[in-house]
Length: 438
Image 1 (cartoon, rainbow, N blue to C red):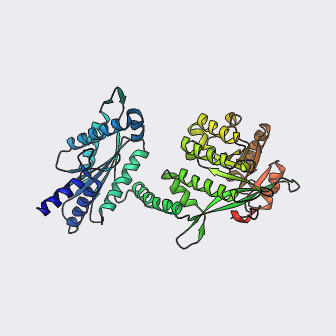
Image 2: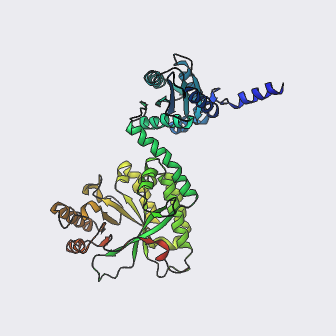
Image 3: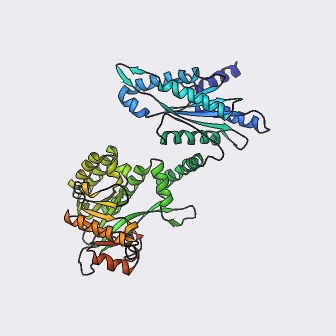
């Protein structure tokens, strides 16, 4: 009797209450079983991950109940469009897993394609609201190189994300020589490092000086705030790889929040703002276009009004391309708090002089790709000269990045650039070294 009760409880705990399918725990257990049985060789087996495209938008349009109803509907479609026995499970909020025994990768790809078409053809309507529905699929053949369910699901999930990146409503299959899927898998494995660094404060704030090109200029000290990462050997490293993973995994808003909170916490500790230099802080395109992040930032600025005149925010030109009007609105809100805004990496992306005049920025930072070769490349010299002339005409100051030597600085003086930043001006140093004693 006790054994029967235990089996019943375990069976109930393995079921997703919403869809009636198996849940992730039960699914992973079955995948692990299949991998163990396959170690000696034998049949091919396949795993499919299906993820509903833009499910948050569907929830917004139809409400949570409408979203739940859609998930139940999709569970039935996925189950009905299987031409052989298979285990179907709900493995995430808007994600399904399909485990098919005795199935090659090619056969699984066809099954996923049929399911994708069936979902695309669904005319979903809930309480008078009609929405288009699609899903992205990742397919992985389970072979003897895979040691666990986590590894097999990772392979399929990497392909699912690739399908989304290529426009959604698609199927991508994993192969051992699939470089794209391998890179995506590596990215996903790197994401926990982002979370760990944020949670355990394995990050530091450094700053690099920005100085007037004309040394007789008496402008106050100015620094760009930079991020540094503490690696597993406790060494301080540049954040190039860290930022790349954060950008590609959609975690830059969390990183920017950490920077803002840490930076303002340091400023708030200062008794008097006398002698405090000016700072510029980078905001990612992901953050400047996000309503939730801007609400957080404005609230943080409101809590430290005395710091407003000492802080600027740097935004890359690519941020404007995604949603020009929204970003302009957010910039005006930031400037209304007394902070300045810089346009970073100008010339590296899509910005043109025709709309530079409409951007509510105070300063233009010229991308280092032009500055670095200014003494040797006439076209780089001409580009910098053009940017300076147009920016000054629009009453915007100009900062040249990557100033590596004295010769470059002399050329920038000739071109009437206002400020310079780079090794010729000064190396990055820890933030606390430029702040007044607390």
